[in-house]
Image (tube, rainbow, N blue to C red; front, side, top):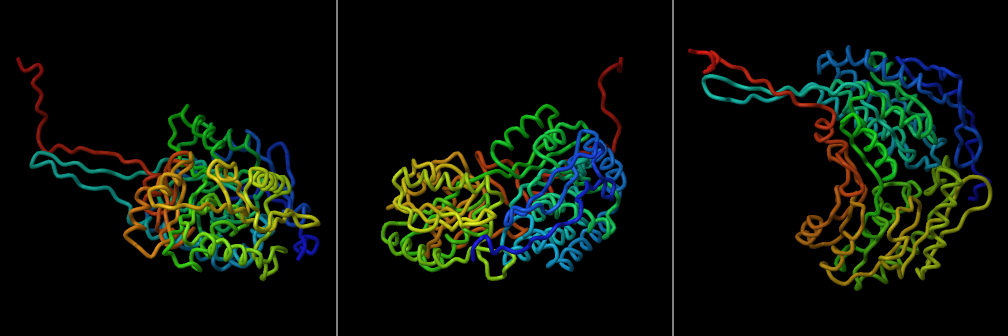
Length: 495
């Protein structure tokens, strides 16, 4: 199907900010247009927050925090559970909104986006009522205990590839701990964050506990620097992460940064060929390759290399690219024509550097930002396509000989978000992932992110973790309390 046949020409209602539980226009009336990337047409008009709006959102969040932080954990759990229920009840409608806003296939969005969001709220609902400190026995004369307390108003900034999932991954643990949040979605995908906020209010979340402000990077920067913010969580590029961390340092505000990657997927000779090829396809072409943890450096051991590449190319050429709302579509539109041009630039660089383009890498005619998935082989580590994050459907296959060699080459990157290993030798699988500089690893699988498992990177790929118990630690502080059971032994002034 060509891009010209893309459906979904639909205009949504005005997308206001969500402050104090209500949709509102920006104080100065500023707006911007949100485009459907598959058609290039305006999807909706969005309120553009200014400094006054950010100040109001943080102030209202502070008011909401005063109520929410004193709400018993069991009641917080019930409300978070109702949010999960509402997400599931509106699964199809929310998935359609996400497709219109992101260009990803409707075949993906219900499970990868909406179900993940619902699972996140359900998981942290189960934790909210169990939060506690610990008792420390200090003998007969004293004891100590700790309190796990919320931080306050948390600022969160999302990315455009998984809008409602990212909003939920940040909001659910923060709210479970008793915090309030001001969330800024990407200006390229602003729609579902506001809808999520409405579902929260409908589920009983007090006004102001979750607020949404729209706008570009300047809005995010102002939010991070606001003196009323106690914590910052960002999903985005390494460049954005550095700027956020520098701004947060002025106020000594803790940060969680989930940034970019150039992750290795390592396939040994003894791997199941079909499983390894399937993983490589998921690790490069799911959501048009617009996933930070993607395994875009596919290292294949020499004995399996040729068969692997042939199988990968054959299956990649059969992928259906087209209308994101067609259930048969497997690869949708990239987020924008500007991003498409950037990805095409990488394809040209790969060819110029001597990599062999085995398939794909061409733009489809018509509106939208459609690119046929590309597979390169005869790649070398020093090539730009093997060093820089492309964030598009471009796989680079590299040959290796030994385990020691591939570990060294896999780690030779400033990134460290994820890694995958395919082998039937599980001892080797565990040995290799232990040696890889990556925060999230898979053995005989890829890009599986259950909410129970913490997710995040090392080195240039970020700081901190989302999901799992580690997210609770990121949104709480520990207070230590010493209790004396006897008099105070003071030698001063006794004569």
